[in-house]
Length: 448
Image (cartoon, rainbow, N blue to C red; front, side, top):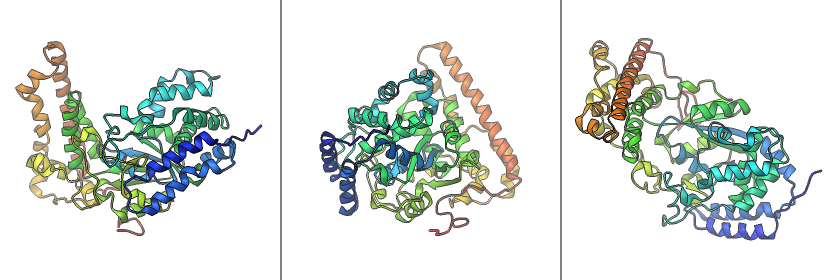
């Protein structure tokens, strides 16, 4: 029997309080504020069943969001966070590659939905009470940087359980019910939604998600690869010394060279979004068109639950909210990378740089001749692993762990060299980079 569940008076009061908080968000016009105020109370005035809400959620188009390094996937999601037609969760969610593996409830066929929701909340409490989310900087939201997300957990439980009970018992249905409950608890109306965006972040999570949602759009954030390398190495190293290794460096070099190539053919349609184009209004209009949603002024500011966001702590500083400028994302990579490193990266990624409209220097005869001898020379960041100060400080006084770390650094140096030789040989084909991106004048209608 379909049970009609009206969201009652206590919840209406909560939504009114949330709507008041939306009024303090940093948006370009009052129109967006009024829109979100009406949405905050809209669903509570609808006499709809969980069946209707669940059916609508299951009918939504799906999008999977993937990063290729420190390329702004969280920033991009934050731009869409307050869009009434987009259902999102709080940041990247490793539902398949983390929660399903850790869940004790879902290991049983006859699990109780109530227990699954309770377990999910316990393993992700920082998503609901963001004052605990220090790494992502969500404890310092809002205009004053003193606010945080606080989801009503009782309300979330009630809605997630109600939605899940109207769906089948597949993990994908649990995922949809969690997204739907979070959307409602954010003051949004499910019935206005057109798209569910899963921020998978990594390829492994995305691949499993696409098995359940094969017709999804695939959206990949990218950036000038030289800037990605500098940010990925220096910011992570400064934030956590455990990333100061040859393995981490190899992963980033591999990421910037491969870019979107590993995702070719994934989903119904696949596009990249350049960080350099965010939050440019013309670019975001094209993105909204590709997603099948209307453009809203709220997408011009990156927020969480309507609260202004200043970036994560890995960045090493608060990133002030600002309008788009051509150099907004420049991080000094020209000064940080050596000339030799820049020449090598330009050579190996020449077609990619051209494809995305980044500055690239044409290859010349001497580069073709000398590149096999340049590739084995340590990158600036690799040379650090050979320094006495690094060797002395890594792993403290534990000599065995120190030796293992240095051995692994050497191993990943060899892997990096082999990877670069592989792409050096590919350069002889001079095959064009086929990654398509939002605003690409070569392939996209309505270009910038």
